[in-house]
Image (cartoon, rainbow, N blue to C red; front, side, top):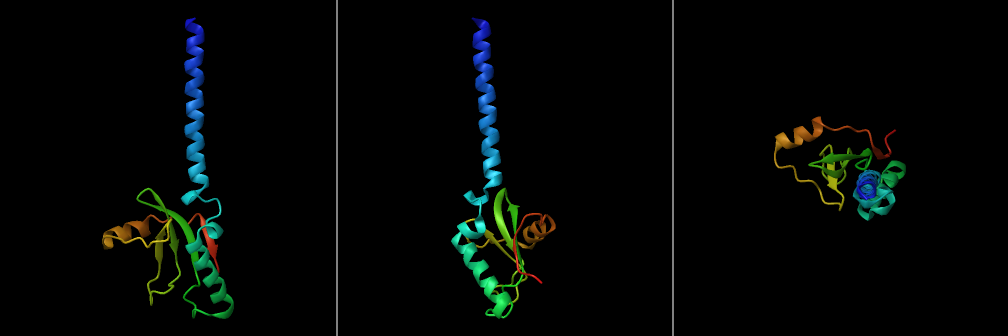
Amino acid sequence: MFYSAAIRYFTLFIVGLLISSCESFISADKPCGSSKPTSELPWLKNIISKADSDKVYKVYKGNYIGAIYLEKFNNQYVFYSTMTMYSGGVYFHVFYCDGTLVNFVNNQTTLSFLNNLKKDKLIYSNEP
């Protein structure tokens, strides 16, 4: 009797461990809830469309030439773009999953973010 109860608890423990591992894998595999953020996130898809036009036709005068990386900031996924876009010269932009710009509190926070960039998850690039 004790043996079968121990097996049940052990089985439940293993199942719980597997479920928590799967959740970690799913969230890592689907940042922002998407397996293909470049085509499934409308705001990001729009930026990439502009970038494609800018590369070929210079529609935006080169403001959409650059790269987009998936990064983490304050334990959240963010998209780091090296495109100047509509800014009039700002070298980079950082967006949350919903497309809103990250508002860095101060220069120290900005420097900390830039110093910790990994740039190991390239999402898009149209750089020559």
